[in-house]
Image (cartoon, rainbow, N blue to C red):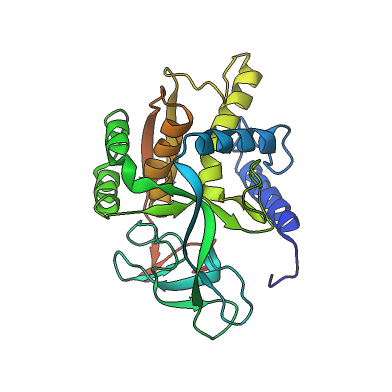
Length: 279
């Protein structure tokens, strides 16, 4: 928005920069593709999302949300900030980078919109929603399989200490993949749940390169998956994705090792180039 460039061009620009950086460091990747144009990706994502909807656990539900008081724009992710309902620290919408807990945006303390100075207004917005609080046992069962650091187990305990966690998995947006279902117009599959499918899509693609018949629609119990990520993404990788996999493929409990990084600090402040804390 600051640069007056649409999302597709922005994504293409930084994707190319990332590829050039890796090449400059002589880091060769087995797989590098762009989801927005990769053959079969959008179709596969819609099919995966339909699997979730057909379980009855992901369904349209009106829950509290925040809208900009002046523009009326739906607020989430970087468009809104406030106090984390878990730790009380400053956070953006949907996830707290400090404590790792998710927020529902409407539960932020003293929320502020990036659009205007006026306090955001609350409104019930209908989105496809998952009652995540129902799956504490499924996550605990999953965590018994792979390498799950104590920090991730502790995060799961905090998340499931909540009485309810009705988590929207679609959001009103013009950028993303719309579900095949037409119950809610103008919404796309939220990018974080989308990534759970993206890994399966990538595994099938990698298998094709290796002459293996690995299928995104029939994940194998023998697969060993290893995730590397920053602690700020822990909730999605180690809690949300196992639940989505259990719903989409009830007979599959994926064996996943989790390796997480903490933020570097520079003079006591987080060193995150993507957040422009330090360049």
